[in-house]
Image (cartoon, rainbow, N blue to C red):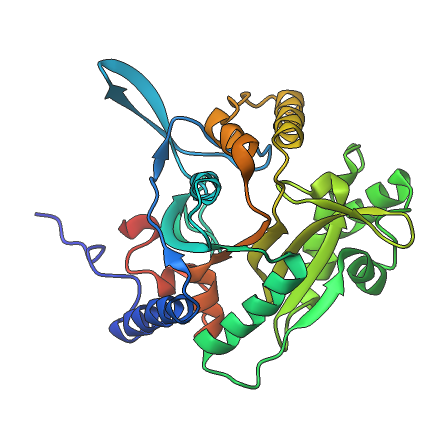
Length: 325
């Protein structure tokens, strides 16, 4: 028999103990707040329409007919169906799957914490996340920074993302990434600039929330108008040590608006030569029946453990990863 050491875990036993303690601390945090733990399916007959996230699929028979199942990139849609059914505040620790190349910060399969708080908006949820970080890090001195998307660009890229000309975006994106001169999608260019110039500089000393994203990047968030007349999304992301840890929204509850956004996503997928995704009619029906006013967030647990343990490779915090799975 060929000799191999790939049967051994990536993470050492000390790290696995830290991982177990983190999961215990997470459950204790929600237990103390009377938030119900749920456990939804990993396979679904529909998937997200996001043009920038690709999914894994498998086939199986259902009632004698072979169907395509999607491995979920997030438990969000299923959890919103529970919310619309009257579950109240809920959270879930789940394995999710995204078809992206494995790297030091990404694994095809990873652990996601997602929670929804009925009655809270995005600002109130950010405050609770700060309490969560204090609790799981066991650091009572931890404090988060808060910076708007616009302010982050003005500070670190010297441009206003809402007013800058397309040609200036193309030039700056090309200067810092060597891409972008032919790109006409403003959001794609803003993402290139954000990843190259802003992400490495925020949240270094302490966690940083970036909030008030452009309305065109709302995803599943509600919109709002500022005093300056600019429409932004009630969406935030959390960065720590230059790494994205979380994405959250004051959740959209309008079924018609959600269907419209799904259609817009699919138009983008078509333009990019990607397959169109069927709309999740179960989610739309749940929204139509009445999703309660709520805010939700998803946090990558493997990345959080990386930050808490000062580790720079995701495989070092997982039992088995990459070529060892």
